[in-house]
Every structure is written in C-alpha cells, then in structure tokens.
Length: 92
Length: 258
Image (cartoon, chains in turn yellow, blue):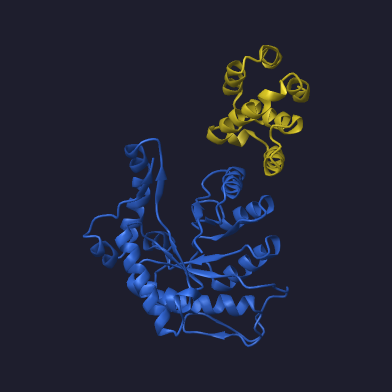
C-alpha cells in the first residue's frame, strides 16, 4: 500500500488537524507494539522538527496508525470526510 | 530563578515516553526526570533516547538509589549520557523505598551514610580522580577510574522526605528533591534543607530546591484527584513515620488543577 499517494489526496489545510488526531490514536492505543521501532523513530524525527503535518510526516503517521489501529484510523478519516482516502484504505 | 520539571515513568514503549518528553520541551519545561524502578523500562535507555530527540531540556534519573545501582555505575551512566546531551544531565538519587528493595532482597542500611558516600563517590568518579574512594559503605581502589574522558559536572539532586535526609541534601547536594505535595510539608522541608546548608557553611543559593509534587490536571477537580490517588497512596505507604506525623497521619493533598 502506498500511503504517500493517499496523503497527496489530503488538502493541505487538513493535514495539521489530521496529524494531531492520528498521533492521539497511537499514543492512546493498545496496539502500539504493532508499530515497528524504525517507523516510530521516523515519526519522532518528524515530530522533533514540527513536520508531522508534512507530506512525508503524515505518510509515516498514517502508515503507523493504520497498521496499529485500522478501525480507529478509518473513523478519523471519516470525521474529516476524506472519502477517496477512505475508499483507498478500506480493506477489500 | 524558578523553573519547572516533570517526571515520567517509563511504563510505556520507549517512543511514547520520548514523545512526552519532546512535548514537555516544546511546552517550555526546563527538565524531565525519568523514574528508576526495576519493574519499568530502563531509565538510561529511556534517557539516551530522549537525549537524541530533544535539544534544550535537562534530564536525568529521578531518582536512582545506591542499593540497587552502585554509585560508580550511576556515575558512568550519567557521564555517558552527558556526552549525548552535554550540560543537560542532572542526577537524582535517593535512598529508594523499602518495599521495592525488599522485593529484590536488599535492605536499606544506613541510608544517610549511603547517600552521603554516594554523592561523594559519583562526584569523584565523574572528576576521574585517581586516588580512589574510601568510605564505610562504598570504596574504590586507586586507579579505578573511567577509561573515557568526562566533560563538565553533573549536578546531583538528593531525593528526600525525612528530616535527616533533607538536612543532608542541604549539606552535600547540588539540589534537593522534596518528596511532598502539601505547602506545609514543603515549608518544613525547606527549613531543614537550609539548616543542613548552614551546618556545612553553604547558602541556599548553593542548593537548587525542587518540590517533587504530585500534580494532576483534569477538566474537573474530582477527576484530577481520582487519577492522583494511586500515586499519593504509593508515596504515603513508603514514607517514614515522621513524614506521616507531619501531616497528622493523613496523606498530603495533591496539587490539582482544572
């Protein structure tokens, strides 16, 4: 799955709030072990630079949340009414 | 100058604790303390990670103890951390709590002596003194020093609750971590630290005094109190009789904010 292509569909104005919602999912979630340490470190890298709402930051964040908490991730995407992204991420 | 620090318990995955510390730095906190308990994730692994992802905030164990971790290893750990985060490392050390020590078959023997010697030995070791250290509880032979160069000092904060330990913090500590929350307890503790500093010919400007309080933030007062109850209960059960007497046998009310 190419998360970067999905993130490109997210309007720039939505990227900040979306990243905040996604980070809450992985901080509060119980499935954090599903996130590989290398991916977690990449997220910390972007967070340190305040770039979690950048295309690359959001791509990694989306990958992490979808791997750890797919249902919650889809729920957040619904909240933002990102229909195309929802369809693309929806399990077959 | 007044500053603010925050303690984190490394109960969660390394990157979550790191994230919280990064958040603390971004919010303007001056220091983060990571607890040192055998049943949580390792304090120095956590701190090394935090050091990598922060730039300004000070950090250190809050607090380690000399019964489970030999002071020379504490010195080695904070000196190594100081290479990763130069000038940002602080070291909190206390006598530990009896319950945890007993779980590992250790006794809290001569805590005042142990703490005094620990502070002296950590300082001597970081300074790479050649002569060795001869104490009653800890000793090192001449030449037992690090093979790596150390740079700068690491301020040592003594975690204290009882009157004698608070006095010792004033005597020998670079700082004191007062393990209390009630303003009355803090006032009493500060006067004991001051008396200790006087005894050693020091002034209170030589001792950075920190109130290591339980602080709970929630939308309403009831929720704030509820979430801090386990922490206060833990502190009270491991505190000495003197501390409990000072509050009439009742736990000090935690600070809460809504």
